Image (tube, rainbow, N blue to C red; front, side, top):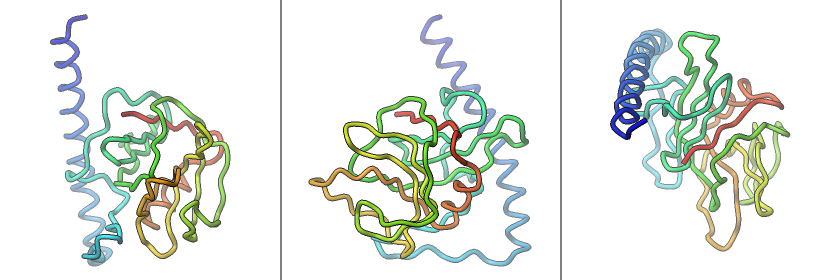
Length: 187
């Protein structure tokens, strides 16, 4: 298969996903409007925005090469997570940005092997909804939400594998990914 065919296939797949996300985002805006205004993001550089768990046009479309089946997809380069369930419509149940730790997991397919409702993160912050999926070179990788809402400031001297999301998105991921759920890490 030539590179032109692959690029064309990826482009068509991306267009289909973007169209699906646009339709879903329109429905999410309608539901959100009925629920009232969203809280605004903090202007503080250390505090992450609290984005909705619903996909929006501001977030990248699910990459075409992200595995199959029910899964959590984490893009290291895009700092984004997608929760995918092909048995539901839409297949992308949620998409949101995340803040990585100082070390990133290698791309591959993993399985959620442990969870903790609350604990202390490797950066010393109190975290909740911890979903661990990989251990590489002595670093544990997992998703979590800081109780104080502060994004990690990775210390380049420390090996931290915590991938932080907002508390709202942490709850969404916690509900979606019990032990045994597949996690696909892409570049």
